[in-house]
Length: 387
Image (tube, rainbow, N blue to C red; front, side, top):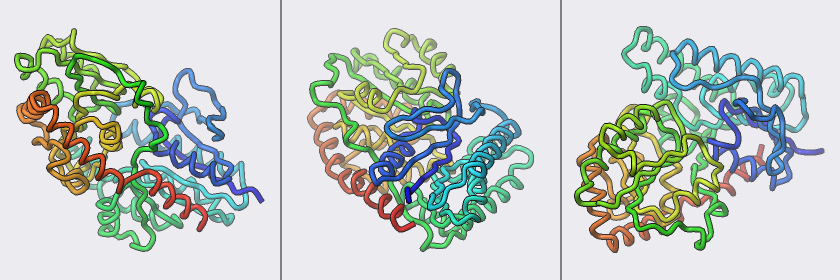
C-alpha cells in the first residue's frame, strides 16, 4: 500500500518555507506520496505539482501587520478548511505533519488520527513567544499567553511525535510540559545541493552587505541601514542588498532615503525561489543576522545563518543566546543586538581585514558540518519510517 504524507502549513509553498520544501523532498525520495496544504496568494494556482509534491492551496490569504483578532480569524479559517480537506480525503497509512504556527492547527489532524493515521507537530517557533513579541503589554495579553501555552501543550500531547528546529527549543518545550521522549530535533539547516556553482558567484568591487528573508521590525533590518550610514567615509563602496518581503519594508525604505542611501540600496521586494536567493547573495562581503533581543529571538537560529556560512560569507551576528550556543566568537563577528554603532564596527573590521574575515568564515563553515542537512534529513527520514 502506498505510503502518504500530508503537510499542513499556514504559509506559502514553496516560496518562503524552505524547511517544509526540504522535508517534502526527503519524504518524496523515500517513496511517500506527498501533499501540501498551504495558503493561496494572488496569482498562484489552486493546485499544482512541484518536484513531485502535490500542492493544494486553500482560499486564505495572509496579511502582514494585522491585529490580533484579524490574525486569529485568519488562522482559524485556514485550520477549518484544512480540517475539512483532510476529513474529505481519508487515507490509510498516512502521516499528517502540521507545521506551526498556530499550534491549534494540529487539531486539523484529529479526524485522520482517529482513523488510525499518525500525526507530527513540527514546531518552527514557540507560538506564545511570537504573540508576546507582537502584543505584549496590550489588554488581554496575559490571558492570551496562558491560553497559548495550554494550546501548545495540548497540541504536542495530541501528536504522535513533535519535532523542532534545535536543542534549545527542545529543552524549552520539555520545561513547558511536553514529554521528553516525544520531542526530537531536525535542525533547519541548508540543503547543500541548492548551493550555486562557483562560476555563478557575482563579481563586484562593492562591499556588499546582504540580508534575505522576512523583513520585519523584530528581525532588526533597520539596524543594518543605521550602521551602513555610519561607515560611508570608511567604506566608500558599500552596497546594501535585501532579498525578501515583510511589513517593515516601507519603514526600511524611508530610513534609506533619510540617510541618503538610495543609490546604495537594492531590494527584491519579494521572496525569490530558494536557489535564486542563494545565487543572489553568494559572494557577498558580509551577511547580517540582526535579530533584536526579545522573548522569541532568544531562541532564534536563523536558517539564513547556515546559508551565509556554507556560502563562505563572513557573518555579523546579534549576540543572542541560541546563536552563541551554535557558533563561537572566532567563527562569527558578534555585535550587540539593536546597536548600529557596534554593527558598524563589525562592517569596518571586515572591510579592513578581509583575510581575518575569511579565516573566521572558514572556521564557521567547518563548524557547520555538525549541522548539515544530510544528517538532519537522515534523522527525519528515520522518523517517518518509524511512524
